Figure 1: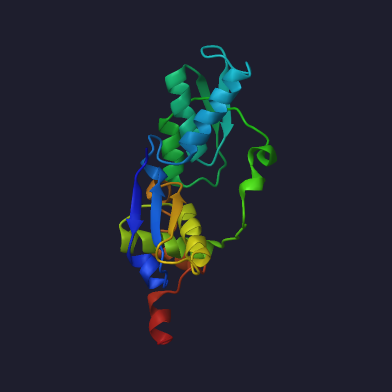
Figure 2: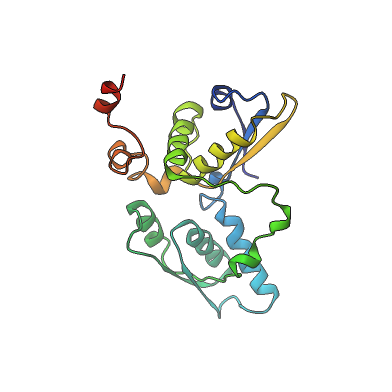
Length: 206
């Protein structure tokens, strides 16, 4: 039951005629669409008899959001949960996951988990355009979304170019800006990685 919000400024600036809506998954309890995935994995494992509340331990190698979703499931369903994280983790993700303490995990094979027959078009995204769009969504639409949201929206703006005014597009926004405050929200971080120009460079190019 996450909200569906109509966007106004960005679709207009991209020259779209259709209506564009954002499915704000960052309003989920754990802050991302991964809550849905975590619940599905746990319940699927329970149905198959792979795990049992109060006995099994969930172990998750995570970059943040999946672990948070599994931690919530573990807390509600009675599983001890353990999270393992890489050293490159952002400070926000590290602090959030430490607060969530211990928990568990169950994985499907990545290839088996994708229902490819329902995908019409695959679109690649690059960090530069994705982060730029995320920053625009915060500034122009008031949506405090994460970097993957920018990737989804950037692709949607391209894919929706030929749609008519009576058609609608729904873009899933997977997570919030919570885990990325020291990353793409920082001008210095963006400039250092050549994702945006420094103010003086902008002035010199004019």
